[in-house]
Image (cartoon, rainbow, N blue to C red; front, top):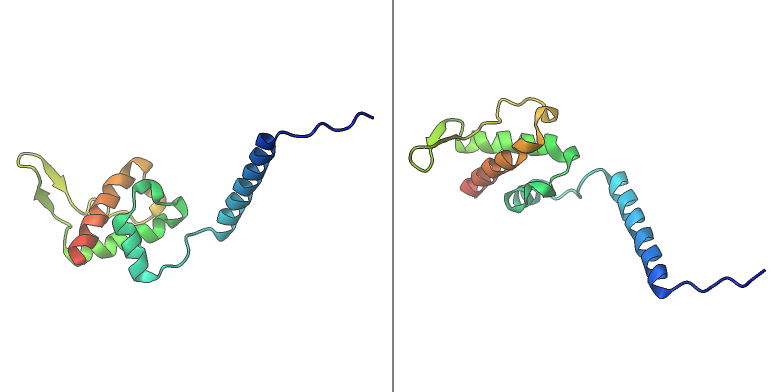
Length: 121
């Protein structure tokens, strides 16, 4: 049998990186959520994250934090923003199940939440 040809270092590196990525994906799937940061750490994370940083499995917690923050700063009424245009604050307080949220609504909800968290700080 002919001897096995040596693999190029580039191919070996690609295999190692793929293996690391697979293991990282398995580790994150098994944990199911971000590490517990405590209430203050969670609020700090939410106040500074982008909506792409949120995981679907965390949406129930995010929605709960949203409702608490909206209630705490009394933003459940419409307010004038930018003169003619009106933007409603607390638009998502009526949502009872995080599964009812649409992906397109997340940026708006997170923006309202971040505004409320900053106001409470």
